[in-house]
Amino acid sequence: MIAKEQVVLKNVPEPCIPLPKTMPSLSDGEYKLRLNKVLQAMEGRGYEALILYADREHFSNFHYLIGFEPRFEEGILILRADGTLSLLLGNECLPMHKYSRLPVKAILYQVLSLPNQPIDKLKDLKDILREEGISKGTKTGIVGWKLMYPRYGTPQTFDVPAYLVDAVYEAAGKENVSNATDLFIEPDYGVRILHTAEELALFEYGASYASESVRRMVAGLRTGMTEMELSQLMCSGGLEVNCHTLIATGERKAMGMVSPTDVVIRLGDEFNCSQGHRGGLSCRTGYVAYSEEDLPGKAKDYMEKLAAPYYMTVANWYEHMRIGATGGEIYEMVQSTFPKETYGWVLNPGHYGATEEWCSSPIYAGSEITIKSGMCFQMDIIPSMEGYAGANCEDALIIADEDLRRELQESYPEVYQRMEQRRAVMVDTLGIRLPREVLPLSNTAGIYRPFLLNKDKAFVIEQ
Image (cartoon, rainbow, N blue to C red; front, side):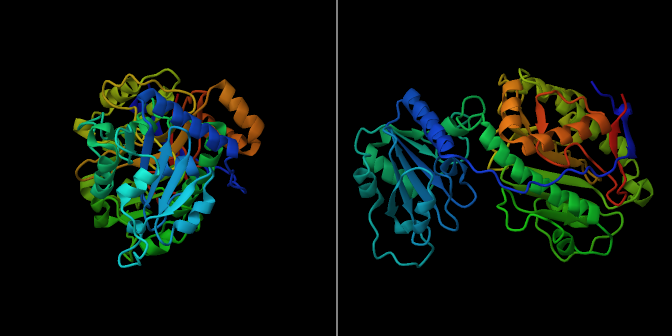
């Protein structure tokens, strides 16, 4: 175990890791594999049909099957046990059915359209469901995005609109309808928890650009500029985000998840910025300062009190991410060395990522879920101590055994080379004894500069 005394500030140059030039695409075979995984999960639960609901932010289970999601409307996807799919979309999203990676029957359902748009072809949803094979006695699962039951509630606790639940109840009979979201994202057995080389290569693309955006903001941070000016240094253009863009300085830092404004950045300000794309998010939190001398008087002991213990915990977290370790063991390591009662973290110390920033998490007290090859994680420990800026160097990584590493190397050599370059920085420069199965997705992985105006200094572990 790394001790706080091993955490020191040293000169750490910016790593020269290139950004991906081409975005990997998923093959038709990948989507057929996904469909088969879901059908097997349905069979195991005895479902004859699944109803998947999606909106602009909560789309990933829907997207997983057909490769796209509704934009400013919502969508409903019906999957039957024979593998056939029906897709309900509103006025403006209906043409997007052509993007589906699996054959679908497209159905206009104008309730999904924007307010006051035409409803001249409106049909009753229960009638549509019956026409698509969901009738009295059809055992039907409803899939939203929030892992409610079996975590809490009952099998009839849902996180989708009431009109959809009511229609499914009418079509199938209430006694035949239950929440099936866990089939997709339950942290032990969900079909989306273990990823293929194709999926991981695509995640690396998004995570690379997210981390580069954050790196550029940190590198370009200066007093006197506004938050909005700083945000314009990001490099990812119109790439799809998996989380809002966050920049908050000074008093706004305490507001949490807020977007950039024209607030002017000042010496000694607290600072937080993050950017996330499908595959991973990067975040950095610290002070707009060169050294302790620039900190507010009440926070002069920031390094000793919070920053160094935090980075000690981060390094230990990375070193404990081994295949076979349990989520409960990871949680207990964090709690025993960086107790939440002292340091104020309230969320899971680490979680799964994917097309969304937070999929679910196996890391919680008493978890017996083991770390496995194919998992995609966010290193995400967020302390909150009164009077201090906080600390965060959140980045994305994957777990890959020897077989998966070989497949990545053979099929995606440039992706694998970037992962190995990031590993080399973490091991050789930062002193983190990274398990062989950990492959970082973020160019900034492990690099934390608590004084954000001191561009040369970062924490390292002295062995």
